[in-house]
Length: 361
Ligand SMILES: NC(=O)c1ccc[n+]([C@@H]2O[C@H](COP(=O)([O-])OP(=O)(O)OC[C@H]3O[C@@H](n4cnc5c(N)ncnc54)[C@H](O)[C@@H]3O)[C@@H](O)[C@H]2O)c1
Ligand SMILES: [Zn+2]
Image (cartoon, rainbow, N blue to C red; front, side, top):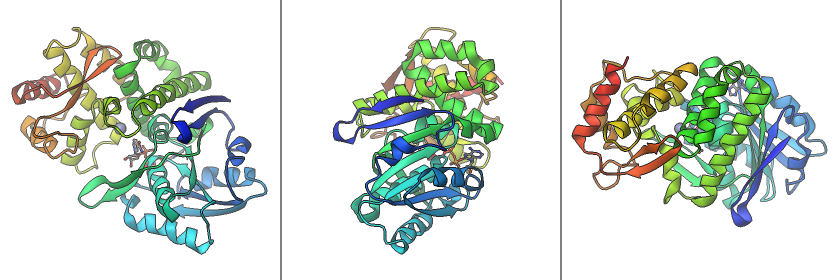
């Protein structure tokens, strides 16, 4: 087992990474303040892993709550279900919530932990690649409002994160690839050596070879933990993690969250941002092609479909919460492994980058 520390003064916590961790989370159990634990999971993940996790929490008073599966259930109604369950089991301030599942369960259960009795301890047990490398580290919790994604939320850091890479064995291929988009993202904005490593190890990664997967997950988490430690509340450098995301959010909105998984939209968004970086001569020629090859080797899409006009994307981006005072703030790349926050791209340049992206497919 490997441990990465997220360094946040009195809110610091360990991320444990390895195989067969669900069967023995004793180090994590030591952190629980009382014997009362609520494991929150969903209908897909619970049959696979809930009993193993529950059985390893020996000596605790373990309760379980299984919610329906899907982003559609990341709502106030299902947040309420968790709170109702905590009330029903008479959980006090020193209870601990374990979130067992992907980013949806982590965000929703994390927000229940942030809000119940003004905050109880929680432990993230992420089971998708995306939640292992991204969502479970950093303390962003919350749920969706009918008018917008993640509109309600809070920063609430977990007490620990338990990343059992064995759980990836049951993850569908499309979900695995979607998680790889966030891995590429973190490498592209801050870790050139990691980016080259991903290129060299792409076949082992796609074969889900445990040694390669452990290294990849660990390096992604180290990078994310460093960013979070530097800027916990996203007032500066944490915004770099939005590389590809402004375009991705526009694509997700325009396709009603049905055509693309989030990571797939991020892959396309990164390609547009790379195109823009290159056409504005901010980064070296060839970066976009290099990024495309890597994303393609991870079975990710690269291009905005023909049916979506550049103007629709621009209009939708204006509604994105990352747009500051009328100018579009984008994350671009200065060189492979070095992202920058930039608000100086004009409408014509962005339109040209979108059209150039559409032309490569
Ligand atoms: N808090 C953050 O910083 C942050 C960052 C990125 C994304 N998010 C949020 O995360 C969510 C997306 O997370 P996600 O991609 O993990 O989606 P998800 O939680 O919906 O999981 C994807 C699918 O995989 C299934 N699944 C999970 N683990 C499995 C396993 N081991 N085997 C088989 N199936 C499994 C799930 O049941 C689901 O059907 C979004 O709501 C997004 O807003 C949060
Ligand atoms: Zn993302």
